[in-house]
Structure formats: C-alpha cells, structure tokens
Amino acid sequence: MARYTNNDANTEDTGKSSAEMLAEQGLVEPDQPGIGINSILGKTTAVSGTNITPPRYIVPNEQDFKSVQLDFAIDPSFSGQMTIRRSSGSPRVPAYVYTGPQLIDENGRLSGKTYSADGSDIAVEFFTAKTAAERQTMISTAEKLGFFYGGKPSGAMTSGTGMDSGDRRAVQDLLDYSVRQGYTWQAVAGMLQSGKIAPAVAGGGGSKYSVVSTEDAMDAVTEEFFRVLKRPPTPAEARQAAINIQQAERSAAMGGSVDPVSLGVAARSQAEKASPGEFAANAAGSAMTRIFALLGGQ
Image (cartoon, rainbow, N blue to C red; front, top):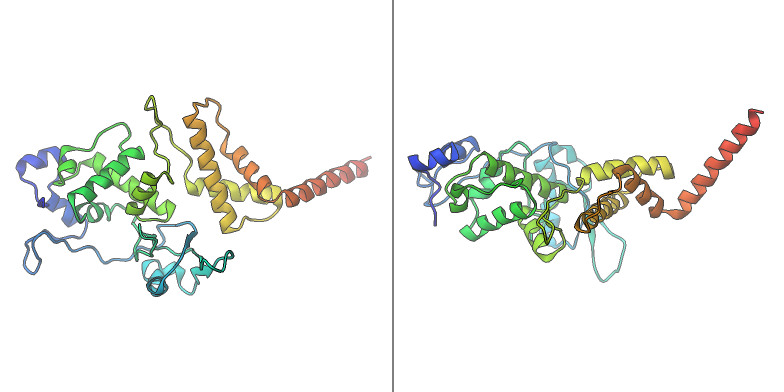
C-alpha cells in the first residue's frame, strides 16, 4: 500500500508534501506514536449550516433510524426537526423520505456524515481511501463529471502520494456535487456507472457541457410555482422538477442543440405541468381580474 508521505522530489510536483496537507486537514501522519501503520485519524468537528441536501427516498433499517439521531450533531440547525417521514406508496415497500444532512451511501444507508464546503474533507476522503482502486474511482468519477476542466490529475494524485491545486479543486467539486445530490461520492460513482447520472462529457466528439445545479433549478422552480400556481412547491415537486430540467439540458446537449431553453422558461413549464388543474384555474382567475380591471377603467 502506498505511503502518504512525499520525498523532496514529490513536493516540487505538488507544491506541498502530503505531511503538510494532512496537517492542514487536522490529520496525523502514519507511524506516529500511538498510530498504527498506514492509518490516519480523521477530523471530528461537526459541519454546521454549510450543506443543504435534497429530500431522498430510502428504505431504512433499524440502524438507519438510530443514525437519524446524528443529524443534530452534524448540523445543529436540525435541532427538533423530524428528518425522516413515511412516504405514501405501496405498503409492501416501506419507503421513507429523508430530509436531513447525512449523505446516503452506496448501500442505501445513512452514512452518518456529510462533506464540508471549506475543503477540510479533501485529504480525508482521498488519502483514507481503502485501496488504490478506490482512489482511482474517485479520480475517474471527477474526470467523468468534468471537474478537471479539460486538465488531467497530477502524477502524484494518480500514484496516491500527493495532490496539486487542480487535484484539490476537482475533489472538492466532486464532494460539493455529491452533497447537492444527497449521496456520498462513492454512491455517486455507482450512479454514474449505472447510468442514473449522466457524465459531463458527451459521446462521440468528446465535447463538454454542464447542467444547472440542483439548488439553482429548485430556486427557479419555487419562484415560478409562486408566479404560476400561487403557492410554493412541495419538496418532492421541487426535486422532481429540478431533475426534469437537468435531464432536459443533458438531452439537449447530447443532441447538439444550439438553442437551449432558459432556466426561467424551463421552470415555468415544470410548474404548469406539476398541476394542470391549478394552472388553468389560476390562469382563468388572472384573466377575469384583467377583464374587470379594464371594465372598471371605462
């Protein structure tokens, strides 16, 4: 297994030794007193108010219900909130909607963690990967999602001995993306492999594209719901509308469309489709209001 220390030759490639990077992240080097070989201690500070995850459907087990108690420790803003609720649906499938700060792992379980937006989890997630193959999965996932922005991972990153600024940015972007999806980066890697998440690199010519973030899409949808339906969307409606907008953008990019739909128009369309009856009633009410206003002005 690769060691997490650099010699002087490696520091020229990365700018910093891994010992310096680990110290910055609140970690300790392997083989220090009281620390076993090839082991690293992670940070224990809680994340507060920096990450907003979307509602997710899970089929919880007993441990998941216990793990929900960690929500407040991860983010004190969730104090007193119920973050897991039974979802309507088939009684044979006890599906629940989880709205807490924890990320869902690749096994569909509450992971007990989230990722910080300040970069403090970069080294933790990369250097504590169980195997070289897991580190390579992180690298390839970041590449497929376009987070190297046309560049390549450094030789030190590939070998697992260090990271340069571009590597760190790619990992942080992957962690931020994972938080927006509500899943660990390992789960995101699996979803990318299975096709549930589309890569950022289109097939054929290899041209790159990007889609609107989940937060921006949900904000636009909320605004249009108020405008079109005179009410806010439910969490499920907002999430589904954001997914629909992102999928439409990916389809347009893959199809070579040069005339993409604006976010506002796409959000308005989602609001109209969410409840056609409400939309028709509100449209009729608005039309009658305009008519009475014109008549009153005569």
